[in-house]
Image 1: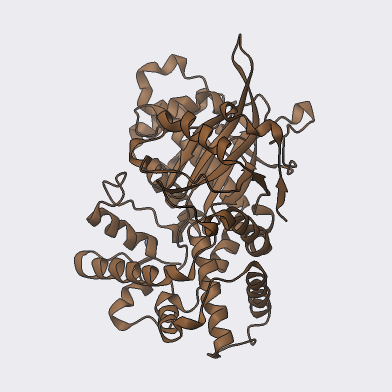
Image 2: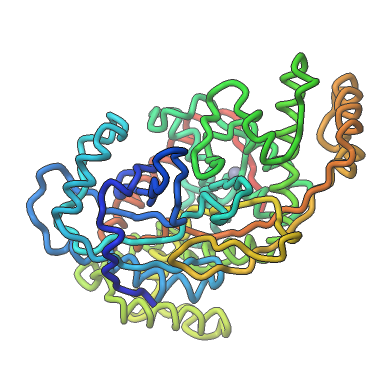
Length: 475
Ligand SMILES: [Zn+2]
């Protein structure tokens, strides 16, 4: 359930620091400089999500309800599907005066390309959630990795037309990369990555390893990395070195081999991710199953029904969303329920299920790590406002990893050098705690359906016509 609160300590605009923003929201983090002399910052482990609006937009009553709607959607629709991977949120009542003060304070920190939209000063609620870029409020540095999984399945819908049959063989992510490159719609994208989400979600160790290796080749594309809550600038040379302290490695005697040391850090990141994903196969499987079973008809099937009965569809209320989820869970338990029916009720159900799938294709997975503090026997609180979840644990041993270098490196000279380096650090054996949360779970609107259909057609057409070597993605 979503709590609505008014918390006086949080209404000092100067205590909020700009963190990030997308097209729809601005994210702030709460920091109190309570000791001016050494600037020690007390963090609340909490971020505030404020909705943006077009600049000088008129007051719009619909916008006022958005934060509440988004928050209730997560607790009513997504939480029953993803369970423990969904975090809690608080709806914080906010006043226009506070919002204007925030807007003035953060203006100079915002990227120029985002300034055409300001904070929406008419919103009555903002959303407070845990800051998943930090593990807890304890002293050990935390590393957080954000992955946007996108589409992690291949469609099989009979509604897919013969001219779009490429969709049955090449996954949406891989085709979309080519479309983005053609349209230069993503400035970070200068080349197409070999990463395929179907490999990561295959649950086959070798394929998962390969996909992590590809992800780490271009970490700015699909991954974001945060150290101590700050995003790492992976386009800058030597960013890997910043992780030495996190992994507790000392490369001070290896300055001349900077590249190799950077590679060791990359290998450790690789090991950290692959160990964790192996532990979390059930979660990966659940997300994949949800995305595909909620989208059985594909946008081509959904669009046909949408066009034929357009006047019948409006955005569900929270009560209606709850019925959609309950019906979906019934159907998954007993597949004989509503098979092949195309009456109004079944079609509406499938259309709304499709929108839930769209939310899950657009989510982010936040994986946060820190060295475990079992010696102290206590768990530091992750946030002053939210209860602490028991963290999970994994063990990284460089000794074992050194033995397995052959799995990651074919070049024999480098392999020899790496083996020496790993031998030198062979006593490295560290336990890490980790947590996983899924965020960015906003409801999608029925009015998006024509856009989804158009974009799908453009992506497939571009790939079918312009891409000479067609990739075969395997589930
Ligand atoms: Zn693919």
